[in-house]
Image (cartoon, rainbow, N blue to C red; front, side):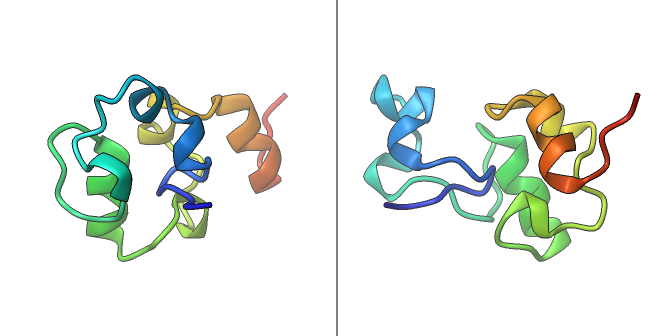
Length: 80
């Protein structure tokens, strides 16, 4: 199972399921990607997964595909 930059299994990603992933079966990785702000952000920050970033969760992670509430939960930074 390949885990995407956002932290979900690639085979569950809506773009992968609809066969519209710009990276095909390879899935997302941290690199410049005009179709995925998360991949581009991870590339610029030098992390493999969003939750390795000290700024996670952030405005970029709000764009999904993982729900922002879940991002807050796993980071331990859930706001009331």
